[in-house]
Amino acid sequence: MKYALVTGAGRGIGRAIAQRLASAGYHVLVNYKSNDAAAEETAALVKSAGGDATLMKFDVSDRKETETALNQWRSENEGAWIEVLVNNAGIRKDNLMLWMEPAEWDSVIDTNLNGMFNITRLLVKDMMVRRFGRIVNVVSLSGIKGLPGQTNYSAAKGGVIAATKALALEVAKKGVTVNGVAPGFITSDMTSDLDEAALKKQIPVERFGKPEEVAALVAFLVSPEASYITGEIISINGGIYT
Ligand code: NAP
Image (cartoon, rainbow, N blue to C red):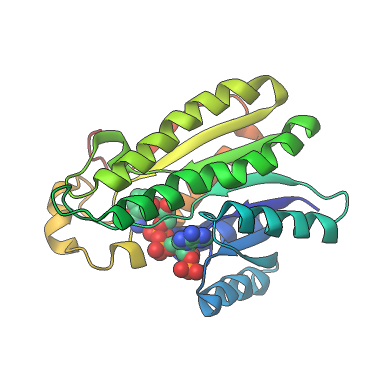
């Protein structure tokens, strides 16, 4: 049994990644924070397509909770290891710096940046020991170029981008690759408050992307064919120049 853990897989991009990795033969560990119904739907979609999924409810921003959940999984699955980790869980709390509350800054950094650390540190050793592993971090256009109203989110994603490059160098010789995918505007709950009609004028392809399109890129990066790609941040944004 090959295991892949996708954080924030209850909805949106994470759900599409979970479905795609399941169809590639992975038993998918579906992490989410609080929306039980959505996560159960992800698991049902995976299973109805002939795959297998296990729900793992924990808050990636909570170091202790993350560790407890992973230790529990290990004790219930002796000898098993997670060979693919997709750090996808993320939130936005947009505000101009002028008005930004400390809680808005902290929660976005804690989830998007610290969440990646909290979970990756627990899984990278197994990958190195087994001499195979794939880590894909879902970052953002915002972390590459910076977007107004998103100093917190741009800082968090920019931090993950830098960590992706550094970690890739640490583990390359052990057969572990670490890459980032940087979506532009993708249709999901996270972007449901945005004015797609206005924003798509800035997108050369003239539409928002689909979660399935991001999932296809992630599936390639975790495949054996992508063994020679590491430390890269691949944009998927319909042609927005970064
Ligand atoms: P979404 O539809 O809002 O879904 C977010 C998922 O993350 C949900 O399953 C949510 O769990 C989970 N989550 C949030 N905080 C969490 C935490 N602390 N611990 C565990 N799970 C947590 O978002 P999305 O659009 O699919 O975004 C997925 C990723 O892509 C994010 O990292 C986002 O920053 C990035 N991204 C998105 C876009 C876009 O246009 N949509 C563009 C660039 C980058 P619950 O369901 O339990 O709430």
